Length: 254
Image (tube, rainbow, N blue to C red):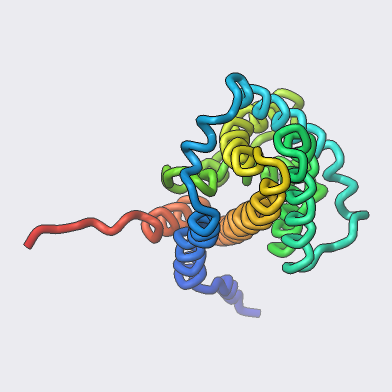
């Protein structure tokens, strides 16, 4: 019997999907910025009105909430699956409750909001074929919070997730939380500023919670889709293609 060469593996061209993911990334901030424009006022000015030291308190609460959310993430499979409309509705309800009493209730609401967002991030991982209860996937879910804050200036694509994989240890978990907590705390500080006025803050909290959940869920969907593509086509090619597709257009002189 003659030996025959093995058939080459059939891999689809990832370029169209990467281009679509890059377009989604560029558009991610649009709806939230529109929401803030409708609410009116300057977020920066509102943040400046927060009591001194509150931002440190917010970051501390964010770290604790991330650790707690990570610990209970394994029980996420037992929680009801929220559809694309149910999750933002629940986030809005939580944000409204947090804004009713101003800063005290808004601070108390933070852990619930973070847990709800993390649950949606886990759903994005599942949709791309990843086991959300696998230790490495759970770490990747936390790293989604390291995406640029919805209301911050775009600092470029955070592509560190396509680098070396972390082995799950206590120090590794703490490094991830230490890296993402300041960014998430900054975003939540902006949300709290909008919730600072009792009753009126309920409207802002409901609107922003739904928008924040949508933003981080979108970042998670993009992140895990790229991870899926990287497993097939390699980190380097996928990373280079995504960076090229999201790079600002260069202005050339005639």
